[in-house]
Image 1: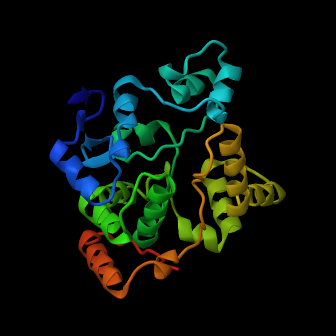
Image 2: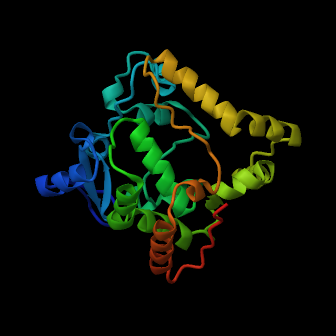
Image 3: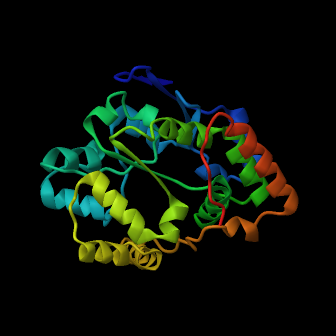
Length: 275
């Protein structure tokens, strides 16, 4: 087990047991893609890459990845294994953008004192369907949607992750967004983001951003990047709609999800949109 200090509570990273690995394999996770670690606080299950990320600040990005190309351009002679994002952040002056999947408690206790944070949440039913298709598309999962939903329900990371941000939603340096709101009115959401970040972009520039960040455009761009890197199929982008869970869940599965959502969201006034 590794211990990383520097937060209010030490972050621990440990390999999951062989017993838990066998259980996950029985539910469809392919063994060569079972390399996951448990991170606390939060009891998160994450790819073993995060063990390196926390302990050595490394990112194993493939040659041809846009961030690697940027690193080679901005920091000639830099090594990928020394941390792509860390070196880019140090090289650029002024405003810098970093993207993470990590919960707030894993990013340091003073994060909101020094950074503006944009947190995007999606309703848990569509998250489950999205994760299922992501795993199967990456050939790392051979189980069914029922077992995938059980992973999401039992591993517990979803609610801990989102509740941390929701508790801080009124902090002046945190902007909480819903995926479904962006699908309903992307330009309106971009206006709010423009105000939060104090960018002072014109309406025309916001419309340009809206066009370039449309789902179809980002999907096409992602496919080009994968082709350039000879990664083959496996785009992160599938349908990008709200309410796709209706095409996937049975009536019983939906009832179990509703019960889980009701239990886990007690004490939160968060309201999701499911279509």
